[in-house]
Length: 313
Ligand SMILES: NC(=O)c1ccc[n+]([C@@H]2O[C@H](COP(=O)([O-])OP(=O)(O)OC[C@H]3O[C@@H](n4cnc5c(N)ncnc54)[C@H](O)[C@@H]3O)[C@@H](O)[C@H]2O)c1
Image: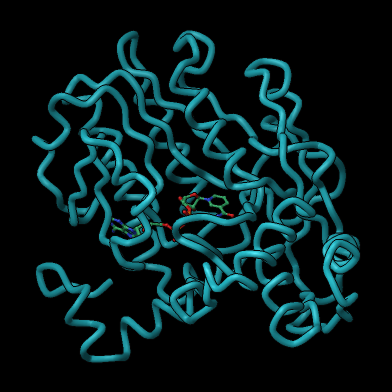
C-alpha cells in the first residue's frame, strides 16, 4: 500500500499503519506527482484535500486546484495506468441548505468553495468510467471520533475538547441546523467495503455514507454529548448563524451496500474524553485544520518545513 500525502499535519499521523510491511509513505502533491507511481496499484482512495469549509474559504483558488483539479488529475492518471478503481471522498456538504430528507438524486446546493470543488470533482471524475475503470464518489457525513490525524475542528470532537478543557461545550449558532454525522472508523470500514463491491453496482455512482439515525440538529447533538460526559458541561454559543443545514437519507448505502453505522457520538465522546484524560491526545493547534494551515503559511520555519517545489500550500 502506498500513501501519497503532503504531510501538512506531519507523517506521524500514519503511525498506526507502520506495522504493514508493504506500506510506503511518499511525500508529494496530487497536483504534480509523477503518474508512474500508479504502476502496480489496484485502486486509489482519494482523500487528499483542504478538508473543510473554513480551509476552503482561506484560499478558494488553492481549494479548486487541489480539491477539484488535483482529484480529476489523480482519477485520470489512475485510469491511464490501468487501475480498476477510484474512490472520491466527497461530502454531504454539497447539499448546502435544503429542507426535507436529501438523497443522491437531490440537486446539490453548494454554498462554499469546499462544497463547490466537491461537486465539480464528482462531475468530472464519475464520467471517466469505462468497462475496466470504476470511479465511485462517497459523500461522507460529518465525521467524529479518535483518529491518527485527530481533528478537534469537527463538531463532536470539538464539543468533547471544550467540555474537558473549560467545562463548556461550544455550539455554532443557532443550533437548529441539521447535519448528518458518522464515526471515522465506520467511514473507514465503508471505504474498505467499497473496494470489495462488484464494480458493476458502483461504477460511476454516488453514495451518501452515514446513518439516517445520526441526522442531528446541532443543539440536540450538544445535549447528547453533554449528557454522556462527566461533570455535566454547560453549552456555549459561538459564531454567526450557520447557513448550512441538511438532513440526509442514507438509504442507498444501506440497501445496496448493506452499510450500517456501528458507532455513535456517545461512543466517540467516551473515547475522546479518556484519550484526553490519559494524555494519549494533547489538543493543540495542529488538530485545528484552518488554524494549522494559517500557522504553516505565516510562520517562516513551518513554511520551510512543508514547502515542496517552493510551494507552501
Ligand atoms: N472529516 C470529515 O468530516 C469529512 C467529511 C466529508 C468528507 N471528508 C473528506 O474526506 C477526505 C479526508 O478528510 P480528513 O478529515 O481526513 O482531512 P485531513 O485534513 O485530515 O486530511 C487531508 C490530507 O490531505 C493532504 N493534502 C492536502 N493537500 C494535498 C495535496 N495538494 N497533495 C497531497 N496531499 C494533500 C493533507 O496533508 C492531509 O493529510 C477529504 O477529501 C475530505 O474533504 C471529510
